Image (tube, rainbow, N blue to C red; front, side, top):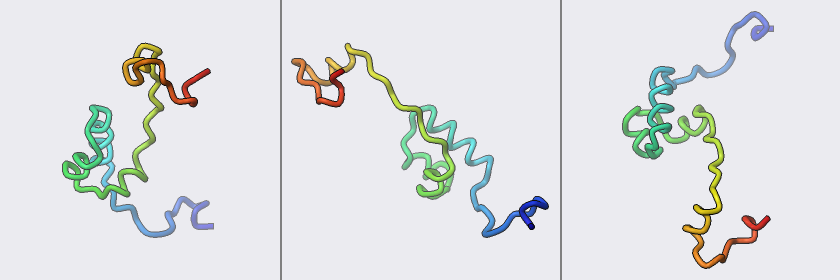
Length: 79
Protein backbone atom coordinates (compact mmCIF):
# COMPACT_ATOMS: atom_id res chain seq x y z
CA UNK A 1 0.00 0.00 0.00
CA UNK A 2 2.71 2.50 0.93
CA UNK A 3 4.64 1.87 -2.27
CA UNK A 4 1.47 2.45 -4.29
CA UNK A 5 1.30 5.91 -2.70
CA UNK A 6 4.87 6.63 -3.75
CA UNK A 7 6.53 6.11 -0.37
CA UNK A 8 9.91 4.43 -0.20
CA UNK A 9 10.23 1.39 2.01
CA UNK A 10 13.46 0.18 3.59
CA UNK A 11 16.83 1.63 4.32
CA UNK A 12 17.65 4.85 2.46
CA UNK A 13 20.38 4.77 -0.15
CA UNK A 14 23.71 6.30 0.83
CA UNK A 15 24.90 6.66 -2.76
CA UNK A 16 24.94 10.27 -3.87
CA UNK A 17 23.45 10.52 -7.40
CA UNK A 18 26.04 13.15 -8.37
CA UNK A 19 28.90 10.88 -7.33
CA UNK A 20 27.27 8.01 -9.21
CA UNK A 21 27.19 10.04 -12.44
CA UNK A 22 30.84 10.98 -11.87
CA UNK A 23 31.72 7.32 -11.26
CA UNK A 24 30.03 6.31 -14.51
CA UNK A 25 31.96 9.04 -16.34
CA UNK A 26 35.25 7.80 -14.89
CA UNK A 27 34.47 4.21 -15.85
CA UNK A 28 33.61 5.26 -19.41
CA UNK A 29 37.05 6.89 -19.57
CA UNK A 30 38.62 3.52 -18.69
CA UNK A 31 39.37 4.06 -15.01
CA UNK A 32 39.56 1.00 -12.79
CA UNK A 33 37.05 0.36 -10.03
CA UNK A 34 39.80 0.92 -7.44
CA UNK A 35 40.52 4.38 -8.86
CA UNK A 36 36.81 5.21 -8.94
CA UNK A 37 36.42 4.12 -5.29
CA UNK A 38 39.24 6.49 -4.30
CA UNK A 39 37.86 9.37 -6.37
CA UNK A 40 34.22 9.13 -5.28
CA UNK A 41 34.38 7.67 -1.79
CA UNK A 42 31.73 5.07 -2.62
CA UNK A 43 32.40 1.48 -1.72
CA UNK A 44 33.28 -1.09 -4.35
CA UNK A 45 30.12 -3.10 -3.75
CA UNK A 46 27.92 0.00 -4.09
CA UNK A 47 29.55 0.85 -7.41
CA UNK A 48 29.03 -2.65 -8.74
CA UNK A 49 25.41 -2.54 -7.57
CA UNK A 50 24.53 0.86 -9.00
CA UNK A 51 26.62 1.17 -12.16
CA UNK A 52 25.09 -0.41 -15.25
CA UNK A 53 27.11 -3.28 -16.69
CA UNK A 54 29.52 -2.56 -19.51
CA UNK A 55 28.56 -3.86 -22.93
CA UNK A 56 30.53 -6.94 -23.96
CA UNK A 57 33.60 -6.23 -26.04
CA UNK A 58 33.75 -7.66 -29.52
CA UNK A 59 37.06 -8.52 -31.11
CA UNK A 60 37.86 -8.61 -34.80
CA UNK A 61 39.67 -11.56 -36.35
CA UNK A 62 42.86 -9.49 -36.51
CA UNK A 63 42.65 -8.66 -32.80
CA UNK A 64 42.12 -12.34 -31.95
CA UNK A 65 45.16 -13.30 -34.02
CA UNK A 66 47.29 -10.74 -32.17
CA UNK A 67 46.16 -12.15 -28.82
CA UNK A 68 46.47 -15.80 -29.90
CA UNK A 69 49.30 -15.97 -32.47
CA UNK A 70 49.75 -19.12 -34.51
CA UNK A 71 46.04 -19.86 -34.83
CA UNK A 72 45.71 -21.54 -31.43
CA UNK A 73 42.29 -20.06 -30.62
CA UNK A 74 40.32 -21.44 -27.68
CA UNK A 75 37.32 -23.50 -28.74
CA UNK A 76 34.88 -20.79 -27.57
CA UNK A 77 36.16 -18.50 -30.36
CA UNK A 78 35.95 -21.04 -33.16
CA UNK A 79 32.77 -20.77 -35.19
